[in-house]
Image (cartoon, helix red, strand yellow):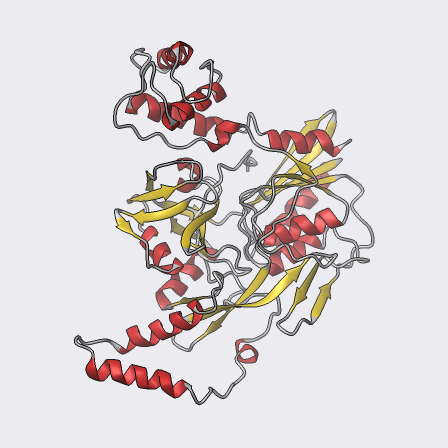
Length: 485
């Protein structure tokens, strides 16, 4: 399958364990572990993880509150509502966005996703400063195609505010049947007003590894993209890596841009292909400060150069890979990653529901904790400015002499498509008008020089397709150019 050339950063899946940024709109439980929802960081059984602890005497206070509500509250309250509310309240008090409660229905959705595919918009989200925030996109998903990107905050779903909802509740609102529409209101940094994005839900496949060979300066170069770290990712990666090596590759680029993370075991197995046995590929620190180090059986590094591509949508397991490669001496190209340095396990409560708790920190080979800091690339490279333009929502058509963010977005997109607007500062001058006319003529639109909804929509569609083509993927180009230096 053809390797994707870029990421229009966005996403919404359902919580992978390594728990990266929070919850996926449908994925197997916290991708903590193989099939039992536990994080493979420690690979303990559920029974081992649930040692009996005598509850404090003050737990009676909770029972009294329960009885007071049941006996005296004005309206009838179901037991389930109170019990699950108490669990959610305890987890909320931890002030940890990665610890959460997943009821039986959420667990079913989560498990369905990892094994095959799920229905949704394809974006991973997290709770950041109390707001549901997009972390990164899934390859070829509706979210990616719509141009959502990291740090977009979700304000409402189908006109209903998500304020007061937890992460899983918001995910449940966004998920839905294939072919149905969902309208999400987005607040984006640098944009003064929130805007609506309409998406059509689809099947989101869980194919996670893509590879191809390109010839760069006469050298066969392998390109491998990992979109998430799921159950079969390591197996597929190793198989495709061998196929590339059998074709005689002389260098390799591993692309984890927009990859929100996943199973710790998956990234561990992948790193065993590259990290020699004299340094740990990851370190795990428990709540007592005890650190365990993991090593490969690899005698020496690969005989060819390797670079890793990251961006702000690379989180959790992606960061484990990136920082391990970086500290082993490989180049990391792109922009600073998300910053998720904890490991979660999901433990059963006996009725199909689970509590996902932060159990560990993960540390780099040198013992660095990247949590809330991210992994800095060894070679920083930004993408073109049109990668970060915003959807244009018009009240009136844009025309000569108009100013504002919408004009600026149109100008940047036109320039990215090869039309010369004369400027990109948000002032609609004559050059911009001529650029609009040229675009309209070439796309069989009425050449008025004004930007109405139809023209704006066509410009946005063309820029998304242009980005997806990878023609101006400056980060990939930089990685390839530097690979053999």
